[in-house]
Length: 413
Image 1: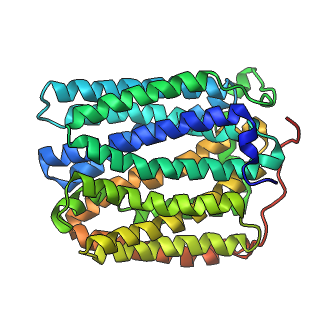
Image 2 (image 1 turned 135 degrees about the vertical axis):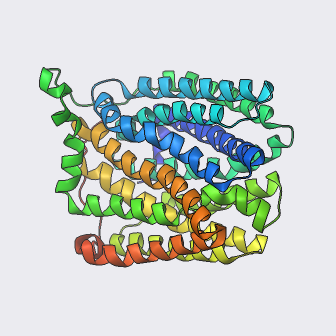
């Protein structure tokens, strides 16, 4: 397999550009929303509520969204989701221009944003195997991950710089950028269409909606991989508290906050680019557990640090560990899932990701109120290390796995 073989297929390249631009814009928006909300209230709990506002509609809708991804054209679902995110950015712009002095309208927009994410995540993950031949799939995963991380590198920094002109500058730019993604996504055409889907009454029942959950439960290695990521990030995720760290601990401004949010993406992007040229082939289980352990150690170091450079380095290493775990998890899920239920299995994966990210942000805000800002991050990092140790015992097949399993993706295309 050539290192950049997936880029030979224009439809994948178009998808990659659309998704990368959207991620870049969303990262810019997240910096503006967090800074704006914290500037209004000064309460770290409100930073957690931003995550909760996105998580509640996400968790309620993502499993049905997976069923829809297995019944409709996934690229059209993504285009609709991106259009909804444009509406979110326009609403945030309107609220800002009106001189908003309360945060509840921002939370309301985050709810709508959570709805869009609920439908976009299963479709996005399930679409990739239909855009490239099976022999280029691993390269497509690595490129998709690396461009995602590059977007997370640039997004927070650009968002922090643009915020110097006011949050309205960020929201206007975000609306234009995601609008471009809508146009790009409408032109995506899969190399092969997904497997035929049933249209009888049963296919619309909750029995079919939950098929992805039953599939994951029947595969201990897949279940272990995605649940490991869930609890590790749930306990160890400290990114929601970065605005509070920037202001109260490290004493830096919006640009410094942008750099802090960028640091994990730098580490993850470097690892993803390495994986695009030299993918993991042996000791898969050890690599995954080691990545989670590194994530936990880096979280503890970040929590204790009061030096900006040390904090950046800790967040860089956090991104390195996270990328290793993400890459292995995504490969395991997509290689072992038949196309007919890939949307629903991707929805289950999205539930775990959403729970670890948005619910983790809420958990971080709550524990910061309970234990204090620094203690909450340190305790979370230690809990992540405990999760890695426990999962080694709970899922011995995952810990001992040497190579990736053979793919269940049909050849061709």
